[in-house]
Image (cartoon, rainbow, N blue to C red; front, side, top):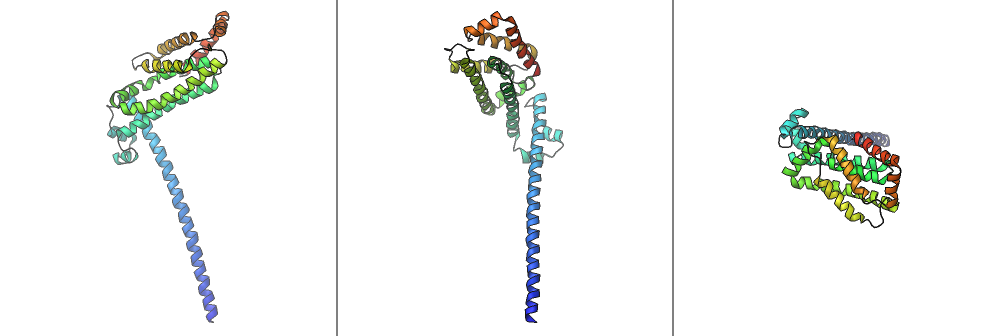
Length: 254
């Protein structure tokens, strides 16, 4: 009888342990799943806040927008906004990163799909100088009022641009598009400096600016072309026209 009682007690205790183990595992899985959902919600909310802030900064200027304005546009509390971004400068940093990422992504698209190295270089000079017409005012204000923040992201962006220009020109030289004695490093330095100094302003017409940048970049690179490349374009007018048509087609996509 005592043995039977112990057996019943042991069975009940085993069932209790099993139930606790299963329940504990379920709770752990539930909490993990909830954390995953919360993280997804946080990432999505952060993305929407950046998109809204970018629209407001672009439309009104950086100094014309407050954190209250952004919270009101998002229809969220200021507390929620400040839990995501500590201050306006942190939010602006994320916006600048988003702008430069978009430009870099555009560079990479062209770099991957265009097989003419000089066309790649000419286009990237144009698009980098343009810096996306709708964001010119934002970039100018960031440079004026938040120089350290602007320089930090501008440097990252410039390094990516420089790397792709250098690869394009090295490929062009290796395949006899450029003269063998062209100093690629000095050429890249000049292009980066030119682009930085001749960035599209918010008051300029983007289409006219794109046309001018295309002509200037082609004229500059023509001075570096090999004799064979120059002769090819001069003797076959259709090749030159085709090259410029490709460049204009890509310009119109921007």
